[in-house]
Length: 327
Ligand SMILES: O=C(O)C[C@@](O)(CF)CCOP(=O)(O)OP(=O)(O)O
Image (cartoon, rainbow, N blue to C red; front, side, top):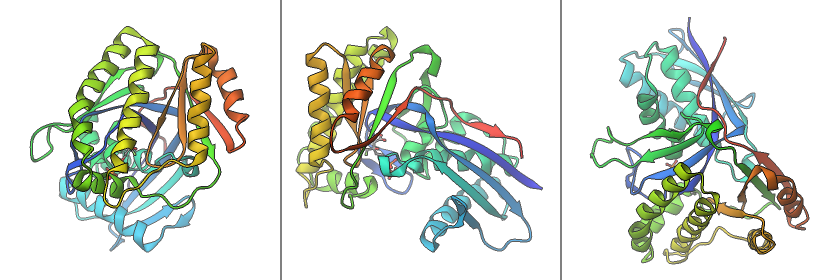
């Protein structure tokens, strides 16, 4: 039987992937940097069978929608092309990812699928190859192949063979606290794929993003090497603010933040004013992730939970890369 099960953990970008230079190959305009988290993951099993004439996708215990199945099947065809095996599979995926908290389960989902699918096909791919495959499901998924602190180098080649992620620090090399703040349910957002496309194509501020993101990345990498939390915090917070600034200049303009987002941002600033080093980052939604040092995580969590608009706060630390589970 050609089957395998893999688990991949979601990641939070400190230096954002924001904009593609190639929509088909998921090639980014800029390099990015993330932390893989230890709490939220996707477990995916893939079972190929000559008895199938189409892929079957089970998501969180239920048959997935037609739209989701088409998306996954398109990714599975990439694996069929790469392996030269025209086989279909049952894909059974379970997310332990609170998607409502603004975690992209697509990152852990496509990383787990790339790992389980290639293993079931006997492709025995190394991590760099897995990263390039996962990238073609969702860009940020290429970072979840690895644990700890991960850089996705944007690459320059048109075929994307040099656009993949690699680990910078192991999870245990630097223990930080990442608090994910779940806010009150918010209106439908512009999904990150549409958001970055519209911004690249129409925002006059996008050029400013590109002019400064490489410097931000190098500053963040220096901070990692020096374990300088203040340097890391300042650059990640500034980078998130710049990413969001680009959306305000898009046509039509859009903004991911709600008043609850601003309440959390304000609380983080007040924490810093009392001498507690805490910094925020925000992705394609209103939810906020706050980074601090483990010694401060309790007080930071309490302060965040005191904000009326905050529904819950999830505490994470750097987590592992791909793991394979017994059948
Ligand atoms: O994670 C980051 O670096 C920053 C973001 O989360 C900011 F919102 C974007 C993630 O984009 P993704 O969902 O990977 O897009 P896809 O390639 O169109 O699937």
